[in-house]
Amino acid sequence: MTNADFEKIVDTSDEWIVTRTGISERHIAGDDISSADMAIKASERALESAGLTHEDIDLVICGTVTPDYKLPSNACVVQEKLGFPNAVAFDVVSACTGFINGLSIANSLIATGQNRRALVIGTEKLSSFTNYEDRNTCVLFGDAAGAAVVEACDDGRGVLSSFMKSDGSLRPLLWSKVGGSRYPYPRDFAFDGSDKILMNGSDIFKVAVRAMSKAAKEVISIAGLTIDDIALIVPHQANIRIIDAVAKRLGVGRDRMFINIEKYGNTSSASVPLALDEASRSGRIKDGDHVVMVAFGGGLIWGATLVKW
Ligand code: ACO
Image 1: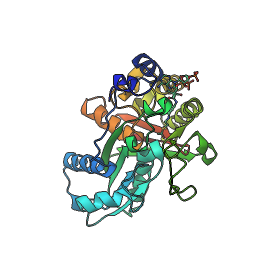
Image 2: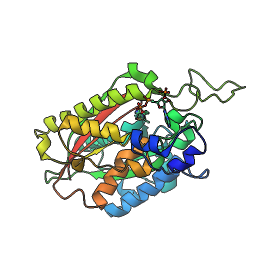
Image 3: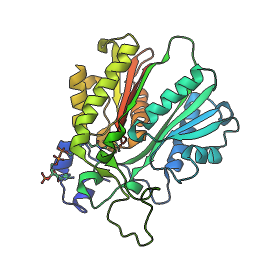
Image 4: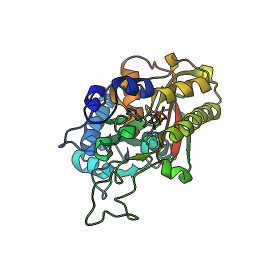
């Protein structure tokens, strides 16, 4: 869906969207495609590129706020469809930080020896959750999935440090009101957007810049490194101006921030794995590089992971 498509449904313009957000287009999944369907595709490709089969995986973690069902988890739907006979599967509800938190949990479980090999997924069908009558939000979001296989290695590479934090008092900045146990759908529910994404964009903007910069600095410091040691930062793709502001606070140029927001918009928990995959396939990440992934999302919740590739 391009910015020109939005000009036809809400009062907006390509110029406004590009200058305010950096987004030119986003992918919208068809009616017959769910977030678990996209997760399954991404998982199959991750397994293929790792040269592994379903039997090798003993942990499936799916970051999502747009699961197929309220019950069970999307991770269990992926397990049902792909069949991981040796695995436990569960979701992580951390909005755009879903993949980062999933990676952190997988890393800890593998480090303690409880699990051996994890599939960490970020998948969102945000179009199922977006109010296409609200120009403040609808132009921002897209659908996508990404996945990574995680296992232990003993050559000093892998996850060097992780950081997770949230502030539940900031819930009203980004939430969805109707449809849960506090405000179940009334029998006569009339569409008013209250079951879709509700957002205070400018306040989130400020928190996001502060939180992402701090989280990135935190993982760099825990790992005993400095910003000069970091080859690439893979940030959550919410807004190009947020990414630029984070880069400024970290003291790096755009050349060290991976950016693909123009093609996908904000895909929540899919955003970081999608960017990571493009960065690695396009040669932006080389063996031995230190890479920081950093995200924030509804909760509000934020976090970062530093890996040696
Ligand atoms: N087209 C044209 N005008 C628009 C549009 C649009 N699509 N959207 C908003 N406007 C208008 C507003 O109505 C407002 O008009 P007004 O001054 O007459 O009231 C004006 O533009 C300026 O609005 P601001 O909110 O000040 O614009 P801002 O520069 O802050 O940009 C934006 C808005 C893009 C939402 C920005 O604040 C942002 O990106 N914030 C972060 C949001 C975000 O990342 N949310 C997702 C979190 S992650 C997750 O968990 C899914």
